[in-house]
Each structure stands twice: as structure tokens, then as C-alpha cells.
Image (cartoon, rainbow, N blue to C red; front, side, top):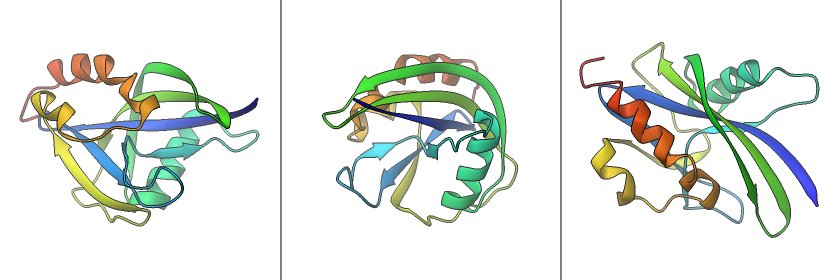
Length: 135
């Protein structure tokens, strides 16, 4: 089975986390943590900074690794490293997504997450608990 390595940004701000709605591909419309593929020879953190610039026109500070999700989709195996991040600016631009929402912990189930992203939600809840409103 084909293996794809990706990175995802769990962007925390003011006691909320950024969820983005996929705007392309067969999983269009599903909600995810933004990010993308790690290019050959690229470090995961550098890949995440690049992907967020490309997808959201934003700069982030990549923090701690929250966890790695291993998930088998029908056509490929996904290995997704998820990092806690903070925005280095106040604005973002949706270049590849249909929508974006800042969600509090109690709102995490209000969107239809892609299957692999569901697996990191327990770690996201813990990160939100340690990142109260106003941070």
C-alpha cells in the first residue's frame, strides 16, 4: 500500500483551535487540521511552515509534536505528524479550503472531521485545556 507522510498544524488561539474545510479532492467538504505532504529531504517542521504559508497565507510558530496518526485509507496509508502551533499574525487567507472555523473544545464535534483527523482529537482537547482563552 502506498504510504503518504504529511504534517498538520493544530493552531491554537484564545482557547480555540483552527479547523479548515477541505476544498478539493475526493475528501472535499471534510474538516481537517491544515497542512500537507512532506517533500523528500524536507524536515517536518519546515514542511508545516511551508504548507501553512501556501494554504493560508500565514506564518506560524511550530511547537510541540502532539502525536502521530497512522491511518489506512482505502487507497493509501497516511502517516500524519500533528504539531501544536501559534499564529504569528492575525490574518489568514483561504487559498485551498472552502471554510475555516475557530473551535472551542466543546465545539470539536460540530464539524465532520476527516477520519485521520478524528484520531488526534483527544490530544487537541488536552492542548486546548493547557491553552486557555486569552493566550
